[in-house]
Length: 248
Length: 214
Image (cartoon, rainbow over all chains, first blue to last red):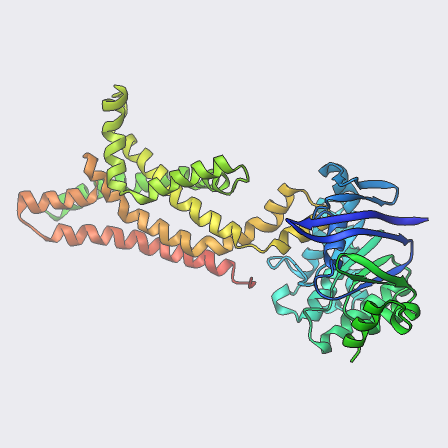
């Protein structure tokens, strides 16, 4: 049973059609990697799921609840309840600079979920341990490397116990050395059967971790299948062309 | 003589201080309302607000003082406004306009990503503004606000234009009536000390926010 269903998602910025009828179903425990050239609409699609961008047409259903139907989003109160169950990790981390690492992580559990502070802190420490940053709980984001900031951002999203994690090019702002530490954390999450949608340029990661790879170009899904099917034996010309360029 | 001058200047300076604090007290929140108006997505409102700010910032405070002193009487036949209250209204409106632009600049300088991170975590707009954005804005506006507030200390002397007795005029009176110059320097010392205290205070606040960058 699909936890996330997106049907016929259309989105335009003015006259520019960025998404032209995207259909995606994601099952529980699945890791879906979305790849494609810049401007293909992959990030926009991800951001439409939690209304950071608004779709013009299409339906999004998450865990049986309607996020948007025929291009119209549910009201904000309903959405906030649903978004609690969706974690998002951004390209630029977007940690709260005035808050320490642990404060970043407990913020939403405290004010959105109304958790008790001790519980939130205990949970946050466990998550920091998981992402390998136990010694940084009192540091501020500006004192951390990009890779460390991104791992904190992952912990912050996980603190809400999300049913799905959305990763929007999580390693694109990192140099290759730091990319590895973030991907390692994401591998661990995948191994723990977290449901994830990952928009990425890391073909190695997609091949190794994804249960399904979706290749997008020009606002449509061009090809979709197992990593082996899409990355090793692409059928579509456009996919072949793209992979030829990125893999060289 | 020294004692007389001191008493007179102190008395007069208390008016400057009064204008200073009351202006801050009302102009700071009013500035926030104006800032919200100028950032409003409802275009007519933001347009009107911006025109208002343009007029206030584009004309001399001295002119505005004169308007609030004589305007109510000559335009509406209302003469119940005291000199000091007319001065206060002019100061509050003038400074609120300047503050609103500082607030707006501060709020608009916060990256979109901060809001998005908050929304993605399920926070409401109000929660994002007060829990995430607000303190970051405060950090960014401390320096421009301190600049403006220190200017206000000295601007309070403009109230003399509508015959509000304040320190600069009092000092000038001594020059005119007693032919002595030192009360002018003496009155300057009042401003200097007061601004010195404010400078230290703002330095302290700025330091408080030094613990993070961004």
